Image (cartoon, rainbow, N blue to C red; front, top):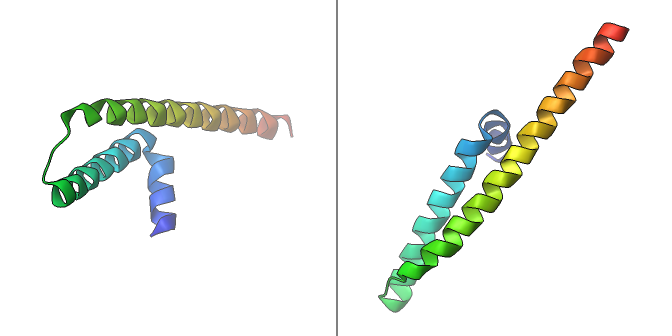
Amino acid sequence: MFNKWNHFYDEHPYRSVLIAVAVSSVLGILIEYIVNRDFIGSAIYGTIFYTMILLFQAKRCVKKMKNRNEHSKYTERAR
């Protein structure tokens, strides 16, 4: 299962971030409601901040993979 998730992350990094954030948000809200019978609306700011950090990380990963692929094309032509 872990290998499938890594492959999905390599193919669709932005979707995988949004799926992870959605699942973790639902689980967090569910646990908070079960334990305290309360919903904290201001916790959405933390989720937004966390999502922005993960999307920025995915963007850097995509950029790094693109540069790595372009570099390998040039080295293959030189051989």
